[in-house]
Image 1 (tube, helix red, strand yellow):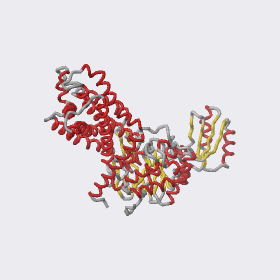
Image 2 (cartoon, chains in turn green, purple):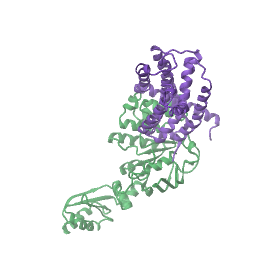
Image 3 (cartoon, one colour):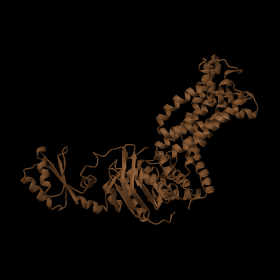
Image 4 (cartoon, one colour):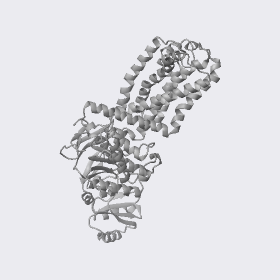
Length: 329
Length: 260
């Protein structure tokens, strides 16, 4: 179903949301073009879920505005629900219904008519590899199967914009991979997808654009390559043998990359390396010359923590409040 | 672009029917649900009849004739407790977030639940009257009065279930519903004419029991079972039912639709 309105798939302007004293969103601006997979990357408590709940009409914003395919999330809520699909953070599956029945019921609530609801349910069961389990009650499904059924249910209405809130959290690697493949197929078919995730790897693989969210704000936006560029390609982590040499190690590493990060508990000093792997030999020589004994040295691809540290100057987990993420349940 | 009123009404009815079907399937597929709603009323009926009944003096020929309508009306009211529990469960499971993001009628979730639980209540009423008949209960009036006797209880329980639904959707926790349910329903149903004649209570308690709408419902159900004219009490029950419905149903739909 197409609403025929022009403009971006998602347009968010100055969106805020408070729960009593807890501020979950402090002014979010976002624009998502049609037909792309857009990743919202951020730690627990960053406000990702609150944003998704507002965009899918489950909660009202405190201030600001948001439109999906030109429809306002507050004023046009009932029309908007016909244009979107949602797979929330908690799997919304009816345990006592079979997989097929779950999808049929959702189809009936989209007012498709019995025959069409059945047809789409069967097609989705096949697409999400649930044929053998289709006639079994969902209570017997594994975590991965429940998640696949949940995502399938969000597609019954053939949405223009699909919201997936941490779809792979808690899944084993195999289930995660099969869900990734399904999302990639969706993207090829032209559905706009807004995906939230805590994993840079996931955003990297699936999303063509990524917004990094922290403390209720978008702090960076770009392609995965652009964001990684801001971290500096790869990250060098040096673990010193002697706590008293931490500061000296920080001083040395500071010559090879901006903003070295010291973790006092693990004795790690990490720094983004813009100069590439060839510089490692130089670093080792400099540490040696500075009489700093090293117990471990690794070079790795930037993780969400690294992106976070580079962008915010603070680690991703320690300072983020838990409250506000789920909002009022 | 917006569907016409007629279309919306048709969708609302269709959504409600799907919801009734879904909820009935849950009764059929979880046998413990049926056990839950049938075992305790049958136990109550047997315990009151054989253990307590001999000590309680009533105006009726035997105690079971007195107590069966009372236990029946109490059981039906307890059904509302199940309504609230079911809704709180659906909230906790995340299923309501899915429903609320779908283009379906908001009232369908509540009304569909109430209708499914009403059908379950009819099943329970038939079962209890059947077992009562085996142990000596007899209707004393016309066919119409005999049908009217449980029907009054079923009708009265419906808006009560809506109010419980509103509570269940507001507290959103199965455990809280349990606590509220038990501390509310037990006093309401026991300080009434359901199990003993009000005249046998201490003087200060009698006005409370008389004012209890549950007493009205039990009196009317009992009068019809005995083949007597319930008189003004019938009008009173109907007014209470309509009044509770006018408050309870919108409250429940609002509690469900709230999105702060």
